[in-house]
Image 1 (cartoon, protein in one colour):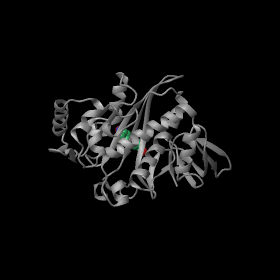
Image 2: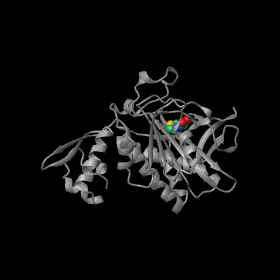
Image 3: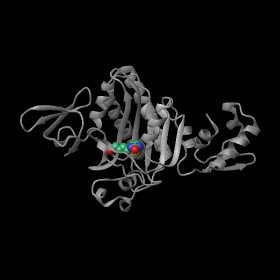
Image 4: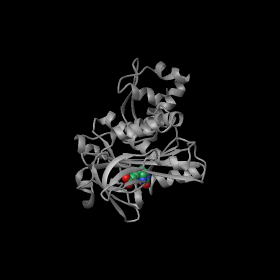
Length: 318
Ligand code: BTN
């Protein structure tokens, strides 16, 4: 365990110098250097003779904290931008230049945040989670939609466990609380007919937004963790927990197949069993009852006209 990870784990209590040095075999001089670097990065570290070191403050969001808190393979290489056009755009660029599996791009603000179906994702500075992860899976392109469901499940689980908020999933991957949208997932990929070269899983979650920060057109439909739970949340621990959950689910998906993702999605969704109107990307619409999802994550709708349709993409009104 690294020095920052050990200090974070101690949650503000003192950790002795020798306990901080031991895991990596650091000398005292090397430890001081590490502590000095942490201070330059904005961490407040108190030193006390005989007691050791303790962490009394963290920057609002730092790549170091996210990397220190993650235990799985995603998030060991984290890049944080104060502002960027879109973390997905950055991550796609890095992936095209060879960035390794698990590379993470985060931003405090996005100036051209991208949503599904060509929409804009409202991405004001410092309040929310904007994260994109490069994934190099060994799957066929038609299985990629399952990774969107996987990310939605991982997000809902993480937020439920970390904050207690009752987050559910509206097909295919809207994160919802009480009928209001909390976040969403945008998966982009580069693939040829037979194989996926790389994917970028972009996740946006409204964390500390207040109602007044929302543009008028989103006020009736959007929410944030703070609005739902009544208190603010630190973004770095949420990111780390999310990355570990995605890593764990990806491992399960690669080794045991799609069943666990589909089952978990069914258990967290708020769409199935309800009447829906599905608006297709091309402008068409289907009305009916949402019955289930199929093996590729498409929504199965028993239509008002008496047929059954498997719908691959669209927006739901329920
Ligand atoms: C949706 O429309 O529901 C998907 C929203 C996805 C937004 C996230 S924020 C981080 C990443 N970067 C982007 O530009 N979009 C995704």
